[in-house]
Picture 1: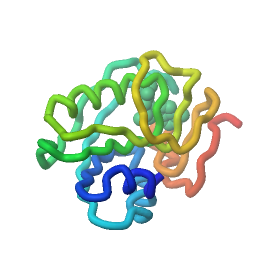
Picture 2: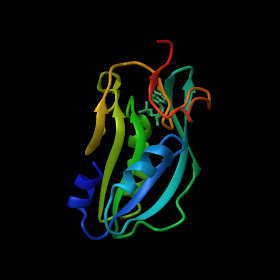
Picture 3: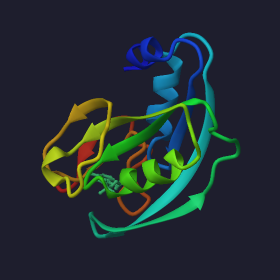
Length: 152
Ligand code: IMP
């Protein structure tokens, strides 16, 4: 995926990672990316009830730098209902990037509520709640060096 993104944007590339879940994926992804890449971070909380998103998304930390004229790739851990990414894409598109694309490690297509465009997807998975490799359940399990299903 890193090489695919690099091929699509051989020159200017600005990666916006979504905290906290994407931090391990981001660090592996960019270490496989040759050439120059700049980074920024934003944090959102999607109000979860248990293991399902409520659809309410709040911006917790905004970007440090402008996106004006840049080729921007959002890096996210997982796309589930698609509500979080739809919100993020909307607010980032309003900042006039030259291009805006999205990379997700995981996707649960059967859970989608909105038709959100994700150009780079690592793996499609079933409707199971997963943790580890940055992904949490109630802020736990992010440190697991593998991805595991909660509740077997
Ligand atoms: P969406 O808005 O429903 O697409 O949800 C996206 C966010 O919900 C992700 O960024 C995760 O933080 C969280 N999420 C969705 N599914 C899972 C999961 O299986 N494990 C951990 N977090 C998840």
